[in-house]
Image (cartoon, rainbow, N blue to C red; front, top):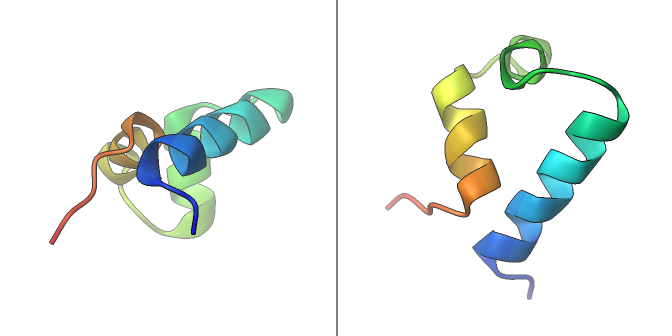
Length: 46
């Protein structure tokens, strides 16, 4: 199982490869830009 930090780095790398901002990715996924930020930082939520 991948840890949150590795997943966050992957999300950020793929987002940057597409030249997208966190806000643009959030809008495409139907989530808040704060959620994308938390994902990229590897912050898990309970």
